[in-house]
Length: 274
Image 1 (cartoon, rainbow, N blue to C red):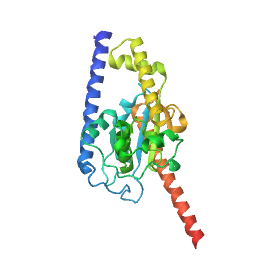
Image 2 (cartoon, one colour):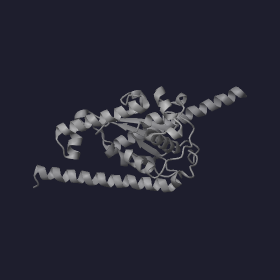
Image 3 (cartoon, helix red, strand yellow):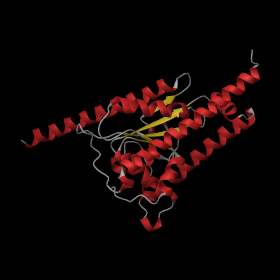
Image 4 (cartoon, rainbow, N blue to C red):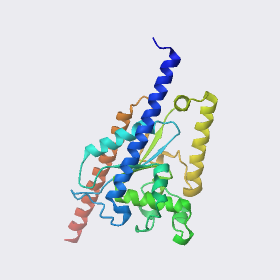
């Protein structure tokens, strides 16, 4: 019979292997996406085969809130929900977005950011930062431009980088925030990184602080403001599969309702004209 230490070591090794496999899985999806889209050279319509918009997701999360166990089931469930000719979903976190930008700047082909069309509260600072001329762009601008392009094209999940703010005016993008009790997040970091509880608590606090500072500096927003998201999900006591289904089903319910409202407004306009 194995000792507790041996069982713990085996569990951590299995966790590390799963994380490694999932990173490879995410990277493979990104490579297929880039090949399919021809490195942005021939970007097409955002409409699906059925005439609707292709949706996109932005995900903000507290450190240790469990995104790693949600990513794969979320991608796979989204693929299953409504398969069409536009291809599979793809996820870009900071690392994978960096891989994309490292291959060259993404062309600016979208209309300028429109605060008046924002689905969530946005600050004047965000509009000012996104209005910089291309010659004065910094890393945030290049990142924001790529995020906007990804979400405009649809079937993309963008993690972090103030994604909900920079895509606030894009009609098909749904914004999610993942939260969890601090004690659970510290325990997760302690186990996954094989560090002490004090160090894990420090990592959680410093990571959350850095993410909050980034959003505040570039978007003038509070990362924990629930009004900045369509869905704030507490991942405590939820499996990765269940959390994925809640997010994906909420996204599609929202898209369906939005398109119904657009259709109703168009009908009202036609009736008013005739």
